[in-house]
Length: 254
Picture 1 (tube, helix red, strand yellow):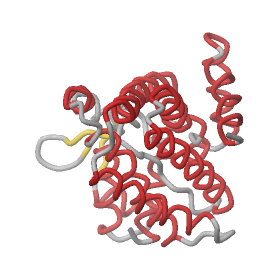
Picture 2: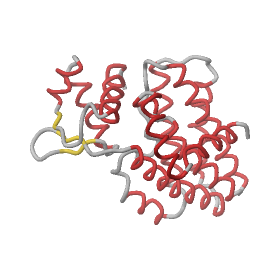
Picture 3: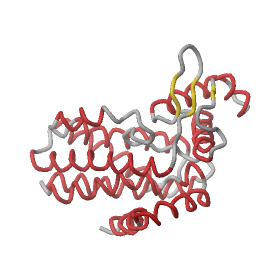
Picture 4: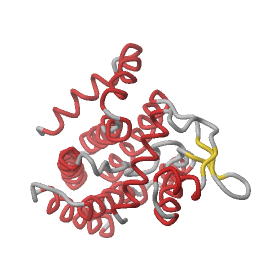
């Protein structure tokens, strides 16, 4: 993924989450190109990715429409995805890891580990990390040994932020990207080791927490102030986000 494509994807995601692009608004390659001052190639790529993550939907003929998305909706979707990923990790730990899965895990961890040890990141590093991050999550889901878990996931994968490994990089905050990737790599390592030991309870718990951490990265899309304001309303209802933040910090120390 080129830097221009990353930037357009990040900018559009922010605009949708902030409400600059409102639900039902029509957008296209042409309108995005004009709005962001880019060619149609990165605009086309970004729109395709946004459709995959459920933030926009394809219209008959040409163009897309922005979907209605609220932080509360995303929280619930991520919680559901976490249940499925956690169940998949626990099942794999209980019933054993296939050679194909082990090879994918080892490769993913070797690449993400090398990137996070560098101390700074480039656009290419972010692209490489996102690729192996998706590989790790897809391996959990697709090779856990329980086809029904993946079949259930297939029914929700079109929803906003339900896509496995879904995170849009913020190229203006590379230091924050390194922190995000370092925590993600550490949690992936914990999950892999738990599965290898056959520790189903730990594998499921950490996998769920790792999936939930996606919400904590929402500031990469909309900015810290906007997210904090939205999180206050969610926290007032259930306290879930506050507890999640605490658990993420604890898991990073395991």
